[in-house]
Length: 316
Image (cartoon, rainbow, N blue to C red; front, top):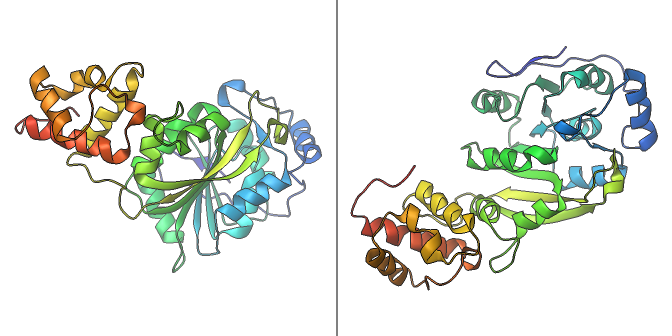
């Protein structure tokens, strides 16, 4: 049985009987899609994994135990969900497409540790989901997020998890290759930007595996990569005001061709002389561009600007 998600308590999906399909293969996926007459919706970014090797690498990277709870975003027909359920204690799988619920009821049959939530992960009450996760978690277990993320919601989903105050341990996600490059990028390159700073502020990021477009059905136009984020016990830097810190970061990357002096002046809310003083105090050349600054340098500039604003309320 699958119930609605949203702000209600996450529902329990109870299934009987063994799964009938080997989903990590083109034949298995094709067979069940044909049985249910399923048609892909491009608007939902539906590209189902059909490769056992990639599935195995994702699960291995998550370092799962029977005490862990997993959040999966977009289980699709349950290919990855099956393997997660076999390795973890409990899996909460959030699926937006109502047409997939009946398929999941079959492919997850017999795996009573799966809770299927029908809803949009970006709107689901994560506080309630977290409470239920703690209830399901075994002694010494942890919360892990594992997913083959739909391309169109990759950044919002990652940002929502990173910015929430939940005590998760690992995030293992398959994302578009260029997004992975941005997540892992270091200062000085074209891929380094707001997402790079956000990810590395909250987590230690590393590459797990490459996933060519051929491991999906239907094949997307680009390749993917599996990335693992290990949550830091504390943020990598501790600016005086994290909200202003990220406002400054977004401004610095908002118009990449602009020098820092011009890119951040609107968010700094300082007269030109005071802004120059902030750059001097942070030991940063105002002619540099945002992509050259480390997380620590952004923190230094953020704190210097706030100190010169003499207690004025920073932008939200």
